[in-house]
Length: 116
Image 1 (cartoon, helix red, strand yellow):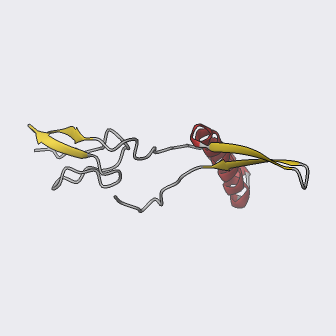
Image 2 (image 1 turned 120 degrees about the vertical axis):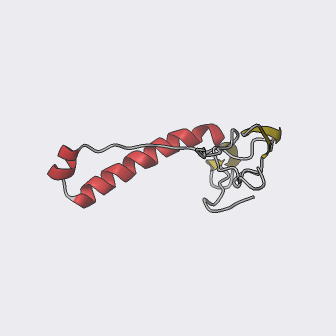
Image 3 (image 1 turned 90 degrees about the vertical axis):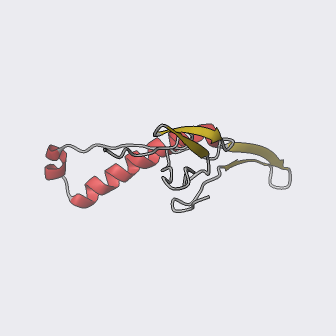
């Protein structure tokens, strides 16, 4: 018998085989003939954003390691910032004392090791 990885349909987290509850978002499942079916969905508990950067061997050999790391992290930051745009809550206000427009952006995040 081959064990398959049980992945949550809501957040992509792992479903605990003993409890059939996603260890990340808390969505509950039930076992029906070895196939997990959702029985209680958490309301948009979280989104998993994934970005990817690829570096060719040629570039790795032609540049200093620190330069490659800096370039890769810059690329990842840029991709993540773009992916986060849809999840930002943006508020604007005006401070008449300083005569400045104030734009505030807020996004909620969950610590990577947090489990519901």
